[in-house]
Length: 74
Length: 286
Image 1 (cartoon, each protein chain N blue to C red):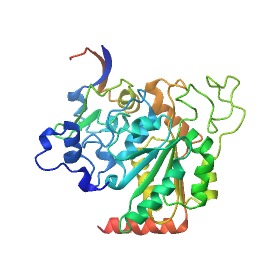
Image 2: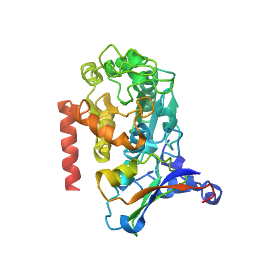
Image 3: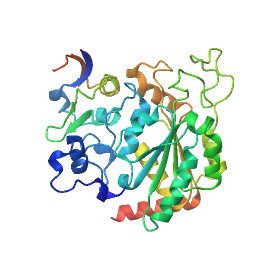
Image 4: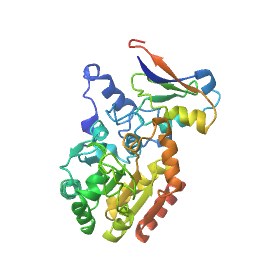
């Protein structure tokens, strides 16, 4: 069981901003899907540092990313 | 080194690991990527064992995304946190002994210039504050005195993070660390001024708060090193473990330091300035 970021895709698609992708310290962890205009997290790579949550919620006040618990095999 | 070494031989694609196939098909080799397109291409650096929320890892991620020619680049590192991520990238990496990175880079750059006289091969040193300003101080300074044509990047976390938190020459005055319980007695070394005096042609100091600007500075430092002489970047990359910064506050801390002692600073000689101005004019025309 560990803590990873999860993008609320419906809300994220409203903004097309990509700022969380630009500030994540992990390579290819948060990616951007141009078709839908939303960011998505690769849970295997996420270390749960919450920098994306800081960018999305504290700096931009958009609240599109939340932290969730995942089980092995999810 | 070189594009032909990167490509997969015909017929072998299905036997190669998925990550490698992605790297060749959707990576940075042979094309210029914009750092603002991060998340839409396969990055050079792979999963690495650096701590969660480490901003040195972030700086290294942006560094690899902004290389002008990754297939013609060699990166040098030394003991310290940075090599944990540097060694996980699809760019040749050389691990120098503690402190001799700039001496190794000098020899390497000279050899590459003789071996490939018609090509630019970039050599970049990325080491911590201990590797460049404490233990490697002599070799760093002498590579600048000799005006060797390569880039030196100092990822300054202001502490010896790997070995339990000893103070380094770059720790700010008065800071209390695990193995400096009385607080540091001396001032932080002014690395940027040292680099200017020692003969660097391009010097920059930054806090990683703006990926576009980091990319611009790194590209400029590498391009200036190709033609003119040594270049130096001093980047603030906080250690969230030794300085007890909650991971969520790491970017806030970088922004905070940018307002205080890590204001963006860029200095270059007149000839380098002229070169960039001409280059930018050409880019606008194109």
